Length: 639
Ligand code: GLP
Image (cartoon, rainbow, N blue to C red; front, side, top):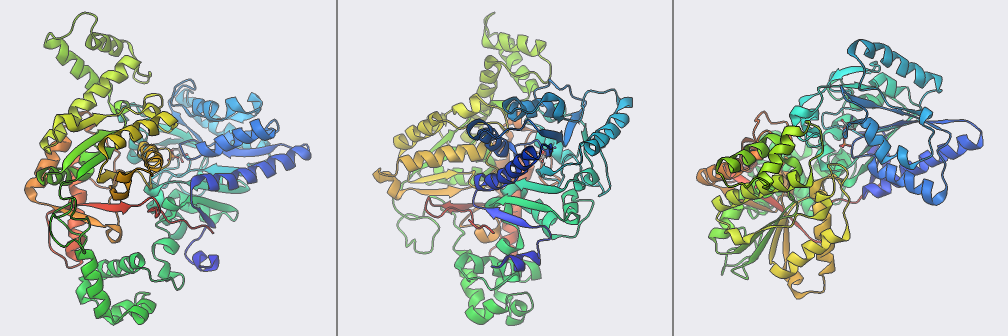
């Protein structure tokens, strides 16, 4: 498709790359060109910098060019977008510290040329400091290149919904979703500062060039709004449309909701592949609130699908074909129905008794996505093993650890130098933001283990079939800064060889590359790739569930497992066993506060979509997409 066609929908020039590394190289090239040109002319280059996990790969690439290719930043002046308030610069989660660790400590920028908004001023000095920050940017000649990420609320910097295009550097109150997204960094939402100092949207728009970067499917919705819908206060990033030198750089999952990828029939004449046809027809049915079998030629013609109905119609034929396809995704037999014709079933019938391996990045991911399916698999006699790739100990609030340690002492099970005693002593000493000791992390890991076991027991998975890999990347890292090593894939590989599964359920394929699910998925695919010569891999199917609080789009679902009202109740109870995660799961747009409510709502919503398409009306549905190493689920497109 031509980029001109895409531009009729995209109001900001947008480049889509197969992965974030390719995108990062492009942005690093632009920065390098600027820095070298200015250095040659004896002038400074002014960079506007962002925090968050998104720019980290870019910073690594700049550090690499500095170290290996002699790119000097001695003439670079930097201005960071924002800082939490109130927060000391030494705090482990301050953006001052983040920038030092991720970039400044590794480059040759003189300290006097680095600017980050202050987070530790008395309140009555903030206004003057913000005015001075704006002045310092002007004195430096203005920002040449501004790097931006985007928050799930559509914020840039910390300009939350409600920030207008003329806003300047100021103190702001953080949105609930933003604080929930930061909860893991701060080990609990209660520890996340309520305020921040941020450059305004107007400050950002004064930069000469702006590059906005985003990775992973969780940002896809808000990116579509920012790029394709008219600018408005509720999505501050949409004001970038008013800037004539802004470019957006996305990986394929982040771009997946853009019209040219999601509904390409609006921007040209696409090839009507089976998945695309399914998307077009299900979208049409839902948009018109008409069951699939009631769509008529006119519906197709009036809704951008004249080409489809002309080349593959009439409507009745398309409707029947699509109805059958969607119908065939539904199965009460997630491990395959033994001894029957499986031509139109999502899973194969044989072997009748399968070895099933569930790889859950953290405890609870499995239960939230597939407690009902797990229960069925066990009921149907499959040999189900659930392996937790990471301990999840970073997600346990101190209060939960204190509760458990006190319980142990209460039961008189703890000697004076016991772990429980040491944990209680540490908790009494430590301030809310201090890093946990190895002891405390181990203890928090135990807590999650017992929660996971209790949840799985309700699903019928026997205790010996529950494994905890405690992958090293997680144990030695912190959120947004995990680094995968060889030992991670080796540990997953060992488990694969031991189980030799026929069926694997996992997640993380289209997640933000810095997230725990994405790192876990990378460890898994590396391990599976290394096992490619082994016979068992030829008969192993991989099913993906979502772990980002959302569900697969209806047209992508390849296996839909209905849950009865009783099964849904059991699922809620199983999720409830993960008590340390109550109030901890990243909030979605749903109003339901608790993880079990959100998960159950999502499963009900999927069932309602099937119902609206004119299929059977179930209470709830859990759903999966099949993944194959050769045909990744992500679309590789670049413009
Ligand atoms: C924070 C920062 C933003 C950043 C956003 C997204 O809110 N203030 O500048 O864009 O997080 O973070 P991430 O890149 O980790 O998804």
